[in-house]
Length: 106
Image 1: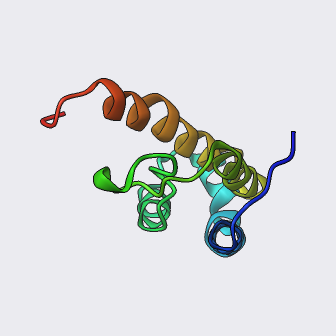
Image 2: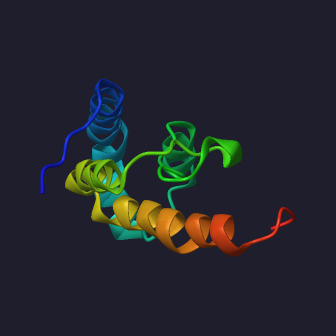
């Protein structure tokens, strides 16, 4: 199977790489040592679309392929596995089920 990305997806992944390098990596050790949830980092990730990567635009998502979603998480996890897991849980275990099975109120 061959995976290819669009120019927009490549640009998105470069943005993710920069975010991971510049914002996540410098905080990684602190996050792991203190165990304090990195609200500011996750807010920044959300502003980049990292909290709803595969969701439709109608609910604020980016409509990315799962291959691009995985590549984005890979780039974040290179800087901090903790932040990558937070984003993975938000995307896969919270946002997608709510989008698929939730109500508008939820």
